[in-house]
Image (cartoon, rainbow, N blue to C red; front, side, top):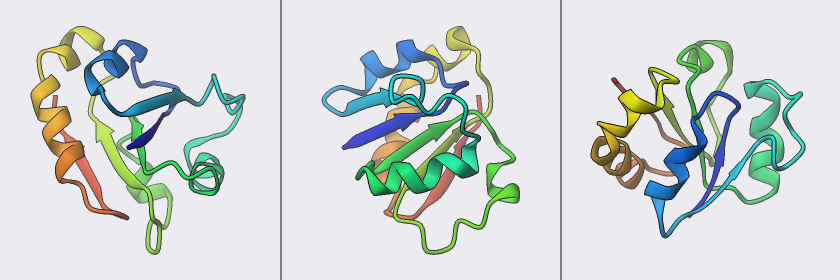
Length: 105
């Protein structure tokens, strides 16, 4: 799966999502784009999932009709996320195309 991390998503998480391919918005040159602005180019570049730490995304954006799977983490803290790696991987694996879910951390 091709995954895009938003700005607040801790980069060390990518090592734990193997064999998926993970890019960050900064690596793509999209660091000035806000979440809603990231969704269109992410889908255009065939990303299948978007991982964010912005829990308000589902309230700020109309996600209807999106192909991206969107996974929201409730913290930006890598030490806390690291303890929940299995939950993150499971949530990502169970997320349907166009779906949205949050992992409570």
